[in-house]
Amino acid sequence: MRAPLDDFFIAPVVAAGFSDVKTIERLGQETPWSDYSLMSELADANAFHFGIYKTTDRHLLAFMLSRIILDELHIHHLCTHPDFRRKGLARKLLNHVLASARLKGVKKAFLEVAASNKAASSLYGKMGFGIDFIRERYYPAGDDAMVMSLTLINGGA
Image (cartoon, rainbow, N blue to C red; front, side):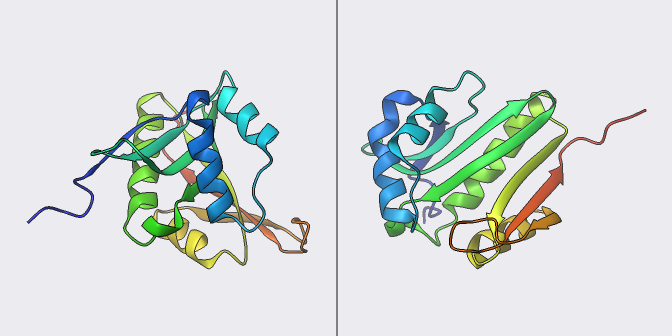
């Protein structure tokens, strides 16, 4: 019997994948990023973006937008198509990005998540991210933002 993730592969997401990213973003987010923000992020020179694609038709199912700045990974966005949630895709994608960042010498990963996003904050907590601090009423609807981090490589003195 095949494992549920055998029919998928991970590869970089580039600006040419804008329409697929936009579709998942619109379906998966209550407050989606603007077209300009998505395109700017995809075109950024420091981009470290990856997606999970279905092997059979190379259709994008989930994506992560992040950047490496010096020795830090800044995770900006992780989104899974609603039809493919709760199948471990976000975890698999996050594991891949963190491992790839370690190979590049990245020492620490940072992200921000809405306190009300229990699914995401639970995933990040299970992956070892800890809450560094809370930005109260950070989002337009008044929700708090949790700034979280994970040490990838312990730095020596």
